[in-house]
Length: 528
Image (cartoon, rainbow, N blue to C red; front, top):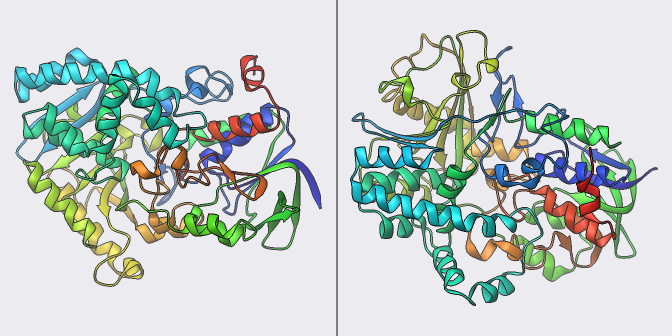
């Protein structure tokens, strides 16, 4: 049996973040990954043919831009380990079939000018005030995103002590559509904001998700939106370089069978081949709450029962990857290429909601698409002049006519329908320009990451208010610890603050350091 201070199950980006911090704290550490490559949902690979680099899941990096891991370069990812980001001026664009376009730039003034051009001076001024409120609230909101969360009850009580806090609580209880409908008159502007927010895998009219509509403008106009040079997975590569620099190890093709528990404490991990890796200080596990019983049956039964009731996101993604002879050209012109591109042929929020309602009923809507050619921003992703397409089509995990199992026989059909929809907006997305295409269904996502993307949910679990803060994913597990199993720490998109590229393993590391009497400020305050 091999002995370490800490062993880690899973090499997704959140696990790697937590591991890198603990390695920097001087811990002898081993990360175990069942796949032949690391990164989990933050990986970039040649999926179709050599020379074309595709992001398997995450594509743009938004929320991580506020993380002190990057803002203060706590791990040296930017200064020492090769991570480099692309920050475009044009962040988000909505394009309608009739040629109407609304652009959001990092610069607030320029964005307001754009909104006035398309909608009205009244909405432009309303957006300015809305965005400024979001930017002003951002320091308080982001302060809790990358650290262990408050218990939800304590958070609500604290927020209820001031008008500003009650205002934010009100937003949290509403839907994104409620929020934008209150502040803006134009249906086009409402669509522009809400369609972007739903990329968090939340319905536009889902109560308890309204904070996204408020926070996103603040993030965009403060930090911008980014993509690593070389693809999303370059973040994971930089994390592994940092981890190894600090003395940690990563082992691939190492599937974990269970957490070894002795005397009520997690003391190691057992692999599927029977090998045991022991840990003196603790275990970090990327274990979805629905999988907790499988890996840690020693946890108290009430804890396991509540973990099994965690709610998944209402929908997921049928993802299209394509390699292209030449880069895509928008019919409205390539000066409209943004890092986030929403493509719509509906012009009212009512029509939009009718399409999202289909997802609730197990139907796929080919009208709910987004995506573009990543090589336009990053030519290193493809041979000279060629393109790499990343296309999102929102879809349910459970199809109404066959359930999840039907995806294997239906994903190509739905991918073809999405392609026909994309062709309304791109003038050279024809068969002659497509060298290869790969469709990844919700079921494929689950198979690829069975212990994290349950039901194909790349965001771990639903982004609902009752599954937020110290209640994400449950009140039992919200502190990253598992009651009844000392020394076991959880990490993943199903934990606080939620799905997406947050670098959220930082919060797990802070909690673990605190329990081990390690001064986090001393660890991260010095040179790398």
